[in-house]
Length: 215
Image (tube, rainbow, N blue to C red; front, side, top):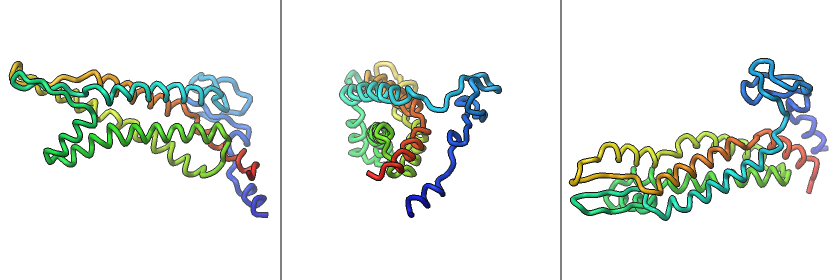
């Protein structure tokens, strides 16, 4: 009885109502429509290649993230002496000098957020592929969070760019971006493309299939 009651109160999706929305402008059409009458985009109820692109971009992001942590992010020259700083090493040095707030921002932006995005996107893709309907609300919230924080993932690259443009005093002192800056920027871009490739409507399909399968 409980299962029957939950299925009756389940929200009606656009696909069940025979409708399809445009990916580009959001205009709703009937299921038999081929192109959007507003912007001309090709209509599709579901993106069948979504998960393939998600895994491909995610793998590229993980590969680019490895050298971003191994190679110098910042090359500082002061009075003829050159020192290199990695992502984590720079955060540790800031912490030692008492800049706790800046150190926390660097560590969160360069370690916590990227690894969290890798794990969140992998979790969403695996759950959708397995048609697991558990914690559907959690997965929707997780997708919204991943999509929201994507715009803040370039903080470290912005800091390096600002320092490189401001601190240029010839032989006295200069700051240059290291090879890790490019790797980190590529990793962030690939991860953002992975999140953008994910079709959130697949979560509803996985929830519906999981509800039909008590196991």
